[in-house]
Image (cartoon, rainbow, N blue to C red):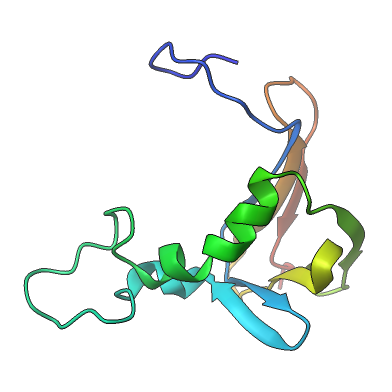
Length: 132
C-alpha cells in the first residue's frame, strides 16, 4: 500500500483501534499499558521538558521493544479471542502474551474499540459502553 505521503507501507489485513485502557501481559508479568505512553522512559532525570511524542522518550517505547521484535519477525500469532458481556476484550497470543482491553467505567455512551479490515468498505465490529 502507499501511505498519505506517497511512500510504500506494509500494513496488516485487519486492525484493532482501541479508545479505552489496555495492557499487554506475558503470563502474569506486565509488559506495557496504554498509560505508559505518557510517562518518561526509565532513567529520565527530569531535566528538560518531557515530550512523550518523541521516539524513545516514553516508557511505552522501552517496554514494548521485546514484543516489537517478535512482531517484526512474524512470530506472534493470535491463539484465541474472548469478549465479556461488559465489552472487555482479551486477545491471547503465542509466547504467553495477551492483550487486555478494559472497558471504561463511565456511564456515558463511548466507543471502546473497533475491529475491521483495512481499506475495505465493509462493516466494522464497533463496541460501545453499554447504554444506561
